[in-house]
Length: 276
Image (cartoon, rainbow, N blue to C red; front, side):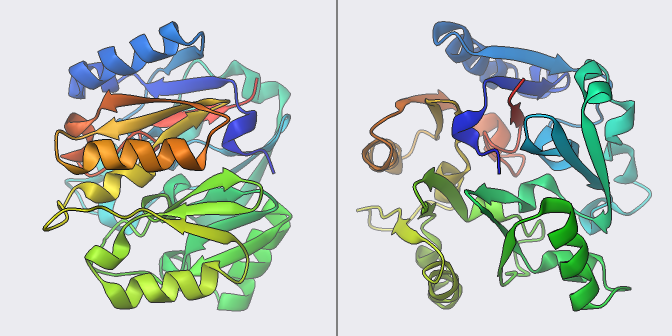
């Protein structure tokens, strides 16, 4: 499985410079300062390119899927659904093997963790016309690896696993501070994840965790560069320190990300990093 530390190119939606101009400027400056290639996806319908672009499993193989999430299925929201086949500036996909997966899925609900993928059980809800066994069989066939399922906290409508964990390498995962908001779900996540990974959890020494502190786990890694959301809250320095300590082989820098976080996502959500 091609994980973040093997990637070398980042794509951003053409909407990002319009919707989050300060973030776009800070992010692209960080790429230039660290010699990371970045490109712009044209003809997208929103900034969240992680969700609709195909998932790279190895250098020449991608998995596409039906991007038709239930939180966008109404006459007002459907305009924001992007079909990756309409996206421009991805000619390299014509030379790659793109495996179609006949399931409704979000890329944000696919965290590649070495030889495994972690996702929430929202995938079963969005494909309720199929049995659990069939959904799992189709996932297994497309991704050719073990799938680890976490329960879906339905108060979080997106159901994205990239808002819960991030892969650190060497069979280690970092989990967000979910226990500050729901201890029961946090315990369930840990119980499942610890069967497969060495789990480290973000913790903050603050009187009350900020409602946006979940966003730190949604950092962006491309190769050995890690970009951590900066939110302007007391947790900023603590998150940066913990992520840097967990990834000593990487260069870790902060990027002001409130423009995206206020819209419901962070740095992983607004990017599509691959190996070209």
